[in-house]
Amino acid sequence: MYNVGDKIVYPMHGAGVIESIEEREILGKKCSYYVMKIPIGDLKVMIPTNNVNDIGIRDVISISDADKVFSILGSGQHELSANWNKRYRENMVKIKSGDIFEVADVVRSLMQREKERGLSTGERKMLTSAKQILISELVLAKGLNQHEVESKIQEYLYG
Image 1 (cartoon, rainbow, N blue to C red):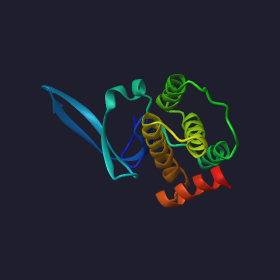
Image 2: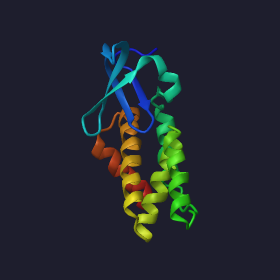
Image 3: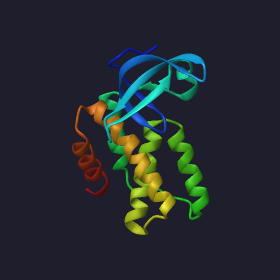
Image 4: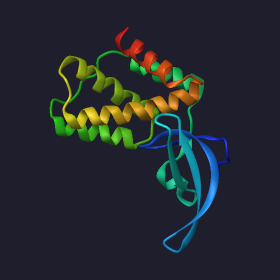
């Protein structure tokens, strides 16, 4: 069980801080929800408290793990499948896993591909989503603002 003020990650949405725990009635059924504020885009998400484990909610990574994320971003070239469909499916699995290191790998590989060859519309949307997930967690883990994290990502990727 999480409490107000806890920093958590909601896979496919990103990281945020629990602002409140509310009880709502939806379709005639009362349920308790975490109301989480995501620092990127000023988004609020309601997460049912009864299936937190099923949807992969986890704590935000530590500062040392955040440093490992940056080292993944700076780790150089990564061989990608030439098949767009296969590459898209593999990247989606990584993002859905909720593993920040996998998300960092997706961001790195898509940003490198964008620089070298450009991205399809679908991959561009995927990159935007993956970057938002990555940045939201790094903002909370490192105590930086969104622009500082974006600058560090650029620095690690492009030197």
